[in-house]
Each structure stands twice: as structure tokens, then as C-alpha cells.
Length: 261
Image (cartoon, rainbow, N blue to C red):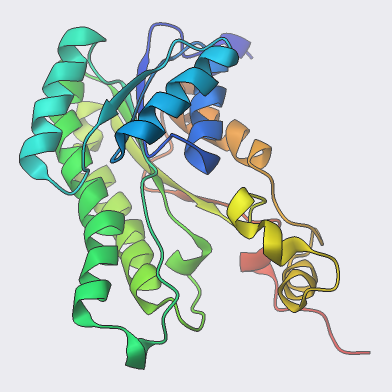
């Protein structure tokens, strides 16, 4: 096998919301494989801070401030990125939010906000980059889905609805754009070690015990666990993989749970 099949040299990758966390980890992995990195955030200070962090890692990443839910703004910045960096070869739709509110207490406005960012955002971004990919005759779109694309859980009705929708958007765009040699796939992370989950990962915390017991691998995932799958789906190694959701969850989706002793 030619190991260069995983290389991304000469490719431009746009990772939304990659100013920290999972998005930044994926962007750094794509950079290590040879891609030029572009990212966005809605906050100027987050973009400026992230540019410095990328630079410290030896990555010349270009950051832009725009809102993935604003169609006109997205079109403007995709055009600008194309002019300043190059045609976007790889899009990772990572930007998203979650609101943990019981359904009876959640307002319609709060529900719409989650849907807008987590589902409409990837649609708007994908639609904006697709013409350039079609003209070039190749492209990779990776949607960051979730375990909640498949499973339900208390207090995350809007997030689960959005991520379930994103799973089906992934499959439908894959069907529509396959003839143009564009592959649209998703990654479904399990429970990942991030600064946001740190308070939950303390030994003895009920949620930490629950996650380790629910995961066959008996551990939380790390952002490093997502790097290989992202590079695979961004590279020529996945040219015949389309409309697939790759769950990186330590086996949770496959697991019924331990039998009580």
C-alpha cells in the first residue's frame, strides 16, 4: 500500500470552530498530514488566541471571524479564503453548541438556536464550499456528528435532534454530490477528555463512573483518538467511503452494557 494515500500536501482545510478543543486537535492533525489550515470562530479574541497557539505548534493557520449561521457572511468569507489561501479541498463542520435543558423547560428560541448552529450551520458551510469542489472535481466534507446522532439522553433534546439531522444531512449530501467526486462523511465522537469535561472526570464522580461503565474500552476518549479518523476521511484513502458516520466511541454504540453481578 502507498502510505502517501493519507497525505494532504497541497490541500486547503477549513475547520469551523477550531479555536480550541476537538476542532483544534483535528486541524493540527490535518496540518501534520500536510494540509494548509484555515479556521473560524465567532469571537475575534478566540481567533487571535488560537492563531498564536497554532504558531507555537509550528502551524501557519489563518483565522477568520464569521458566523456559520449567516449565509451571506459565509459566502463572503469562503470567497475571501479562496482568494487568499486557495480553493477549499476539505471542510470540517465542527462548530456547535449544546444546551442541557429538560425539554419541558426549554424555550422554542433555545431549541432553534441549537438547531441553527449545529444543523443549519453545516448545511450553509457545505453549500458554500461545494461549488469550488465541483469545479475542481474533488472534495471532502466531514461533519462532526455525535453519539446523540443515534442515542437519546436526558436534557439534550435540541442537540440530539440537530445531530440526528446532521447524520441524515451527511447521507443526503453524499448522495447528491458523489457524482462530482465529493465525499461527505461524519465522525461521531464518544465522550472525550476536554477542559469542559474535566469536572466530570474526577474519580468517584457519578458521571465518570457511568461513562467508564458504559464504554467497553472503560475510559474516556481523547482528542488524539479523533486525529486518525479525521485524516483518513480527509485523504484519498477514503475516496470510496461516502455517507458514512464513523463512531469513535470506544464501543458505546455496539454495547448493551454490563450484566449486574
